[in-house]
Length: 297
Image 1 (tube, rainbow, N blue to C red):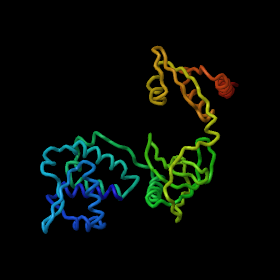
Image 2 (spheres, rainbow, N blue to C red):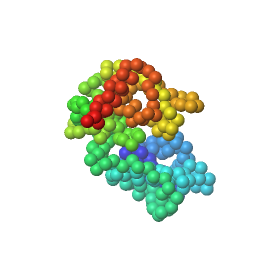
Image 3 (cartoon, rainbow, N blue to C red):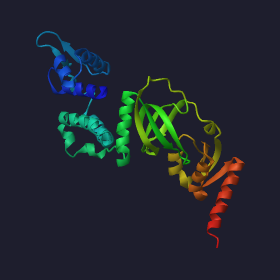
Image 4 (cartoon, rainbow, N blue to C red):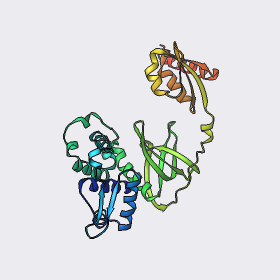
């Protein structure tokens, strides 16, 4: 993994006075030419590496780099260390290797201290862990995957995907790629993927272009008005759609699924009112009547 190697080379330079291309080549099991390319990338990232020719030549950091601490303070290392620790449960040995390298460079990270005030909870559940590691490998190897997927409405479909990105967002792991079944870019929540199979078929990366399903185009734009008592939750859930008007908060939100819109509105109880559209108001009232009938004797 290139990121692993670049970080490892940087740490070698920070922990030793001088290191040769041959030593780095043997250490990371790559060619000397690759090491020179990596050193150039490290320089471009703003870490000053100086090269020396001759029998005692090699690479070292520019004199004074440690004294200024212009790139990595202890707090910087703590952030990186805890971020990697948070991912360790999902990616296993690959991340553990990076964590150990940081720990050897800054032993203070291994003891209790200020860094423990910052926690990144990026671990996957036990059920997701093996899937995430397999998906990560598929992304690296550019291998097509097969899986069954259950969307938010409970519909199950079989998919073939060219996986491109695996990332964490708002408490969930997601996989993005080109869906061969839909001939378009798609995003899948890992927790909803089942029967994941990594094939031997490889692919060449292509430009990912959004092409939403027909069902997604037919969204409903709702104009909602919330009481101020609901402000903390409203601000969090509809961050970019909130309009604060002093005595209330207005939200214009597009819902792609009517059932989901109704469930969200009901969850706010009497703290929200639908201003438009009228047909959404009617659907809400019908749902309220169904709820009421459940409690009538």
